[in-house]
Image (cartoon, rainbow, N blue to C red; front, side, top):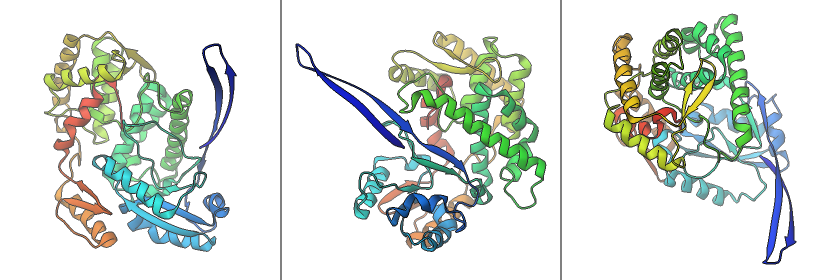
Length: 390
């Protein structure tokens, strides 16, 4: 992100007054095959410095690390790759400090860019955009289907409250999009590729439109981050109960979430958890609920006057709806099963030479890869009542 600050200082009777404005600019470029040596776009950003610190997830590095090294070598740029973990449970102070240590060891100076394979952010601090983001959808070729579903949930989140056209495309091509990695798998039908490209471009544009008035993420009246589908499904049911959604719109949202293999309801989602989560939300949102709901489908409405009794009633209604759905509202691959753990350990062993059942190690970072249920309660605590965080 490029930032130019213009400020003035004037003397007052009691002291001094400083006033300024900040111009912020940054770019997004669609570029499949970002590490293809023929694509000079990334190299241009580092040519001036002649070196690059690349901060990447260990799984990404295991697949693309050699291509990354070949790319920078081809363009005469020294690259140092720092491997870390970026899943939800790794968003800790230890992870952040390990990245800072890597930057210190590398000797990054104030204006020097750093290459990141993924931006990670949580509730602590504010968001500062990269100066240039390359949108490389060929990475989806190697992404496990479970994570494709996670991304699909993000698209449903955006489209239900801000873009009806994208929701309709997701509804039409749901299974094909997930099965082909949004058209990036070999042999993907051109119709699916075209739909996927339109969905990706439009969703990013809509998200930027929503975020642009709030570049440092200081405002609270919006939905953002890594949502879980339970929250979206419950918000839709709450909206339906309050007559903000029609029966058909509500059924389409829950039906699409279910077809995508996403979780609609969970046994830990109870009245006590809902009440506790709502109390926590009110403390961080200036006493206002700011519950985001679709109203109607494709547009967003924020609620501040929902009573506890209404939320409980919506919860019971939601549980009843979920029981009628395939798998009774349960998601597909919603937990880290043994197979996933083994694959993660295999990558870790290859990258670090360490191996420890149920854990990932990377330069002092230790992350439990425990089951979905252990993380569910904490996430729902911050996702209730239409709120969405990372």
